[in-house]
Length: 331
Image (tube, rainbow, N blue to C red; front, side):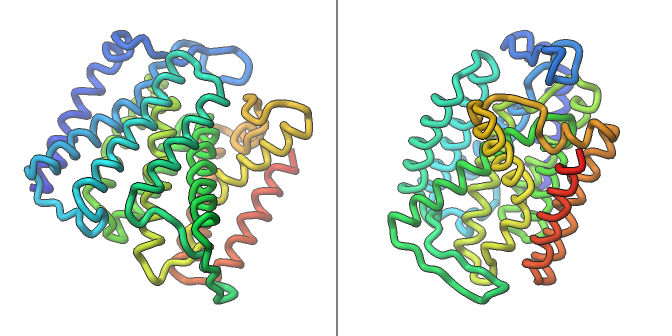
């Protein structure tokens, strides 16, 4: 049955690629050039998120109708927990979709996310981070309930928004997301789900390479929520996973967000005000698009693989921090 699910996904993605422009025209959803911060020179369909959510809905439909042999009870407590996850993903997609189409204010989006995430965290199973485990000092910090809720909410908010801000150039977020999908597949964690997302991202890359589609906020918010959700679940259900090991995978987008927020506030600007001070824009000043993506990718992949599978996370986190600030400060 898994093979059939994969074939259905492939056929759907081929159909989507063929009809990408028609879908964008029907929804009237494009990213328009501003001849300043944006690199593209013509309207580009913001259909990446639609491709991903469509694949997820197809898989979910098969699961909920028992048309798939996927045993998801290892990842979700029951059908209700799965449905909460599915509805949550749809809601994050919709926030991004309406932002892509109508430009919702940053404050409204942020407050809406806080409300949604609080609700999701409180009604889902195994989604509260109750402990902070640091491998290199072999210490476990148990959190009281109020701190657990705050810390979990903060982690979700940081990564969802960090991934959105990380989506500034072609390939970057989609290749990074493919890497995270492969990580979950290799660790046999809801593999079929991440195989389907990987397939949809691979087909999306074909369009993105030709500047015929962008992820849009719908895609980056959706992916940010999905990876945050499953990293927290993975962390909470695995006795051998430490906080710093997870941080290795997420620190570069998160660090870029925090640096930008601090810099913008220091300059007297609103934290969500767009600019060209992102790591990828800085690298693009002296590098091609491919080299820029390669440098960012290696900065995430090498330390995260080495730290997660071989230990010494303090060393690899330090390497990431030093290289990151070296790249930013040598501008």
